[in-house]
Image (cartoon, rainbow, N blue to C red):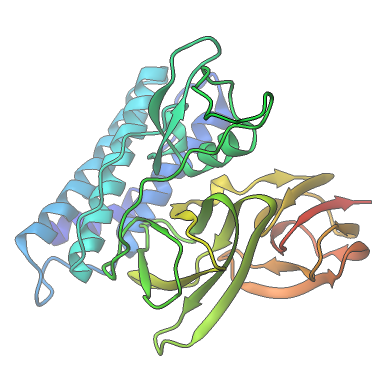
Length: 365
């Protein structure tokens, strides 16, 4: 019966058609999420009859399949906001079930169940807890997605006053909230945090059900970090030199291809800064047409046409702009150089990776 249920996933992927919609673009986005989850189910490597399959694994697959069917029913059943939220909750349930299945397959701990993003359920499941307060309100801990965590770190929403340490100058910026300290372990996890590192231990980040995926790597304060991904032989396959210049590190990094988990090492330059590595889907990549700026390594989505562009850089070391394919794999280097202004040609719309240790800007001319 389980196998028959799974074979039925593929046949229902593209039959979702709203009868009426007030916001066609929003409904199309939700429909695309349902379709993407169905495709993830259909392409998953687990089979209920495979050798070594356990009842727990089969139960998680059944939970994911049930959630997929529930999301389709809720989507077809109404156009109201309440029905939309029901779809998102069903998809969240299904994604968590697949994450649990992936953890069982590699013998790792089951992922912590986080709620949907506090600010908007459409952002997906939260990846971290932060301290936040509305203007004039009381500060509290809320769960947010990776993108909102980055947004609040870069442009914090006004928070309620907090006691200042003795000796702090009036008007000084508040100390960034530190991440909870955990001891990194070798078993795959959906989110990993730690304090400093010599790179002696290889950490494993469990791959999500959606692909391709990003790592959002951040530190609690100013830091210089080398992040090295490893292939199956243990040799370095991708090295990222991360720096926030005069600020804390917040970097989006493409995750290399991996079936169940991706291994990496963290090399912190002489400090004990707290850091965190979390997963994020492609929808959290910032989009732009004319101009965008940032600090440190990042991934951006250029939506303009092929033509001339300008890369401006203010850092002490070299910067590189790389074109990526739809799976975020390296395609070609389109611009590189030291501090200054560099002209280049945009190949066209798509994903691009900035490898940088300081402030930069990109524009189409």
